[in-house]
Image (spheres, rainbow, N blue to C red):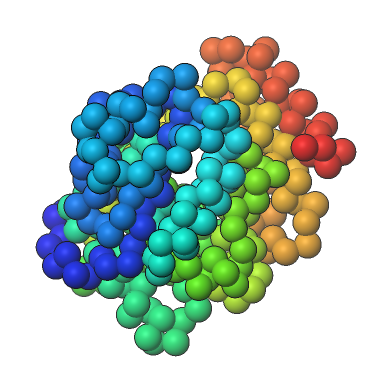
Length: 306
């Protein structure tokens, strides 16, 4: 859905794109889409082998800043570098973007307008995010909330602009700099997985909530591949490289040990981990490597190891 918004409505919004070994053609598409919807853009490159800064400079000149970290410090550290960059330039909002996401026209303006209206109505807004659209299937995912032992979809009724949700993925999230000052930046100890969940849980513990926009959307990639399996019902399960399961399990266990995550998240996440363990054991094409990473993650989470 294309949303028409005047350029003046996105004043003060800085986009932060984290890259690591990016597909440069796809990154170019993202930059073209996001630069027309924001005040400024920075690409924080996490140690890619290819010269990302040089490639982008040849296409965009000085229109896009690139901060090269020299090595992979993780998505949380890269976000924090981008947030400092935005704050130093007087930005009022940051838009966090993954290299594999592309905002649809009008997305940023819609998020900012909804954010400002929610704040004006007296809400403590942590973030507002769009609906992810699967890049392969075109399926528009619903927003979700904790419900018993699972994530339940939150339906967008006709005419409703935003819905209260319990989680947002980091990509596409619009966050005010004032809220980042109050809640803090991203937890660099987590490196990659659960970084967005941890920040939302920390914000919730401070009284903030997150909202999902019903019309704003972005294309997004989930996992490197997917596999259709039967786990109580037919499911499309994202497949990740084996090393990722280390961080998924370690970081969930680390968060379970902290005092601020809510009880509903603890319950849902425990079930999620059990389901993932079954999937990795039975269906992952590199099951032994993935299972080894899973077990190391569980061990290091229990021992609180970085």
